[in-house]
Image 1 (cartoon, chains in turn yellow, blue):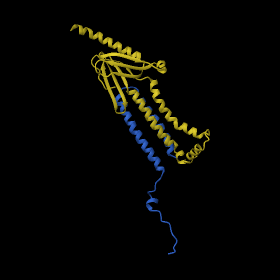
Image 2 (image 1 turned 90 degrees about the vertical axis):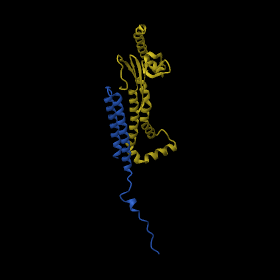
Image 3 (image 1 turned 135 degrees about the horizontal axis):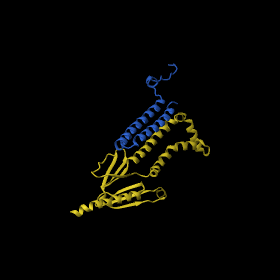
Image 4 (image 1 turned 60 degrees about the vertical axis):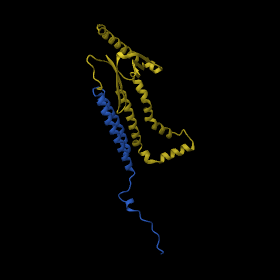
Amino acid sequence: MEEFDLEPGEEIITSVRQHLLVLFFKLIPLLLLAFAPLLLLGIFSLNIFSGAEFQTTRTAISNFQILSDSFPLFYGAYLIFIWMAIFTVLTRYHLTVWIITSTRIVDIQQSGFFTRKVSSFLLLRVQDVTTDVSGIFATFFGYGDLHVETAGRDENFNMHGIKDPVGVRDIIMREIALLHQTSAPARDAL
Amino acid sequence: MNEPLNPFPTPTWLSGSASFDPSSLFTIFFTVVFIVWTIYTLISIYHWFRYSGKSWLTVPAISFHLFVSASIILYMLTGLQN
C-alpha cells in the first residue's frame, strides 16, 4: 500500500481486513448464479413436471438445436462474467484495509475499480472505540464491527466485519495510552 | 401474351458473396466476450500491481485469475467448434 508515507518514528502496528467468512458470504450469491443454469437444465431434463405448458417449453428448447450445440459457448460466456464479478470481489477484499500505526489509523477503501478512498486520523484525537459482535456466525467465528469516534468534526470510522474486533480495539487503546504517556512529559516540561 | 410467368430471380447482392452466415455470429460473440475479458484483466492487473505490488499475494492472485479464465475460455471454444 503506497498511498501514505510513514512519519519519522512512526511504525505500522497491524493491518486489518474483513474476516474470510464475510468474504465467503459475499461470494455465495455469485456461486449460486454460476450453477443456476445447470440446475435449471437439470430440472428441465427431469420429467417431474407434467403440465402442458412445461412440456411445450421443453420441446421448444430441445428443438432449438443450434443453441444446444453451442451451450458451452453461451454458458462459458456467462461463467466468464460471473468469474470477473468474483475476482472483483476478491480484489476489493484485498485492497480494502485498515492500517493501525503508532500514531494514526489509515482507512483504505477500494469501492470498485478506479474508486479508492484513503483517509487517516490521529490516534490522539480518538474519543471512543466501540466493538459490535452480533449474530451466531460473528460470535462463533470472532468477527464484527469496530466504530471509532474522533474529537471535533472529523469523520468517524467504521470497520465492518473485521476479524477479532476486540483485539483490534485493545491494540488501538494500548497505542493511545502509549501516545499519552510519551506526550505527557513533553507537556509537563512546558 | 400467353407466356408462362417466371419468378423473379434472386438479386445477386442477396445470394452472392454477401450472404450471411449465422455461425459467424458465434465467432463475433466470442470475440466481443474475449475483448471485454481482456480489458477487465488489464484493469485488474493494473490495480493489483499499483496498490499491492509489494504483497506476496499479487502474482499468485493474477495467475489464479488467468488460470480460471483460460479454463473457461477453453470450455467456450468447445462450443465454438460445433
